[in-house]
Image (cartoon, rainbow, N blue to C red):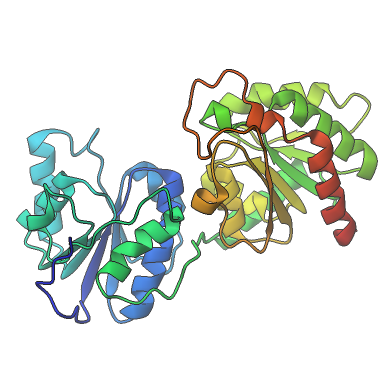
Length: 355
């Protein structure tokens, strides 16, 4: 269904993008923000997301204001929602683009009196929207294009199809200081590896990481930097144990937040990761190196890295239907089928170009 109450969206003075709840999808949604800003360059643009997603959007020059919305915390219950409505009403937005298919968020925007409310149609909330294009099949389009479909369905041009992440100068300096304090000398080949991940079936086996790290350190003298959260510190220790007699990997696990990681990733000659938030952040943050992306149960056509020119995607094969969302998979065959030798060959090919 597609509502056509409005024939044209004129240049709004104030635009709100009501975002989604997840870090990776917030990053993907920056293509929407960039396209809107190009279409309406004279407008001020605000983004409404949970506070945990703020780090993805900090430093983005297209965004004038970040507005916190968290249904599990500050906006939990009627009192919290009324406070949020009062805050939102006072900002006098002319248009809001709802990337989340929530009924509650559409209702809040309607009650706040935002004149134009654009989002995907659902039977429950269609009457709350001024433009309600039908959503594409999320299993047939890349997640970025899924969010951009809100604009295209509303008749707006899409001029940006890659996500963006902006690293601040002070973050670049902090990353340089971290590497210097960790004993990294100028000119060393630096390989970042990301062995963790919030979804176990997407992880590459730890034994594969250990084999790869030992080979990279031994065959081309690379310095290894293990990235991840505090919960991944044990993985870093396990990988270090496999590098006997070789330079000890630098562990950034738990020592850097998303912003610091993004700046750090720009220093890598090569970054290797499974399908994860760090993979996409490192890709969007830019930098001098390349990226090897390891995909098993997820489909690069749906959640692969964009832009694609810096990335080499290696895919596992096991005969299963992909994408697969079997979170209790016992053998993880699709990821195990990507061998350390395959990744090493690709890594040496990339690093030899940079030698």
